Image (cartoon, helix red, strand yellow):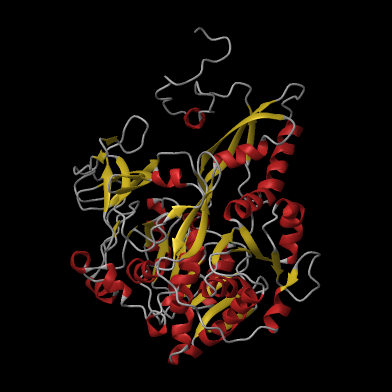
Length: 604
């Protein structure tokens, strides 16, 4: 094992060295020089802007500028259906369809700044709705299609949703029963050819009657474009506001961190309801004029290998959970398929195990390049780049244009602030909170309706990520853990408070505490500790009932495990101590218990 601080990874795995040939092929060949010379102003010049200097619009950069060029006939979108059927749209096709959707919105009186939510899987209508919304200067708010009714309702309420685009099935299962509680939701558009459910409008018919020409209005780079919800450890989900200028970072980071080019066939497996599936599953590859592959099917190891082979994918961006599941099949499975076109593989969503990086080198012939960013950052901030040696288990180094630091932490685990200032840790291999200096274009601009929460995300001149890291002497960052309790399960961010709140709606539940339990495949599983009301017994039948109740209300982010505990640990102010629950679950030291409320019957 290599010791930390000597320039090698502090793991049992050696550094994966890039060859001179690999370095020469990369978009970014000289990391140090790129860091010195990069500017976001210059990155902005790589995009065209709206004609006649009318500003900067994400949809124009992603679609219209290509459709107006010789690249208009190039395939922009290749959608693989659940039945393996393939639907293709060129850049010219995508321009016409997104224009029609923008005209549908305009015809309904939906204008600039009004919120359009999508509750859709990876189907063509999703991409058309996203781009048409942005053309209309309305705000796009994507939802995860596996959410249950309560998470859907809460986000529509917080975001002030006026329009929802979904399917008849999803509307019937997840929206119809909550519709009356959302008076601001005036239009629901449903896809498909069948009769729309009561209270909804047929998207296909509306699109057919809308013009295929639309002039994008003047767009200020600071105009609100995207609203991404991310779960917090307490309180309601946070709605992170992003603006049209974010497209500058989407484009630049796709070139730098994903080594993406116009000639590529790119597959991002992230669900479009999450920020990765929007920033890199829709916007970034289209800004480059690449071909974007999507798959509406569920994960299956053989299916995914077949998609990589049949669609001739060259750059693949996926999640550690999927890679770990593939790794469970051993080295032989990928070798049954022709993956010779694949040249770059990257991962995001949660820390990537060093074993998976090495497995990629062995089974795919390519190391997996981990990178790091958040909903709030809007784009990749730290990564293992194509021309950079890979230290298995490391997040990589900051991208050009990104200034990252490790800040000293206080007793509460967050960055220590004294007199409005923070201390940057210069020494290598010392743990602290990862912080970024604001200024990149995709930085979030607000938490919708919650200015106090937004202010708390900053200290001095730094954005506080909430992640605990260390930086080695070569400038590579290593993830240590979260300074809060947000659960990362199979690439999804799960807020414990939201899960606890739903469980407590069950008549048997008096209180709940929710944690993430480590899992070799999903990263973490959601586990709930439940205190029962008087008159209820902790039976196996009730436990299964609570799991089913959570699944109905929360969907894929519901607890997988429920245990009964009539003495949940509390702070003296009455909050359940999730940190302590997790320490006891993992057999770890319980740490400072000075704020712990005494157990019933304990000595004062």
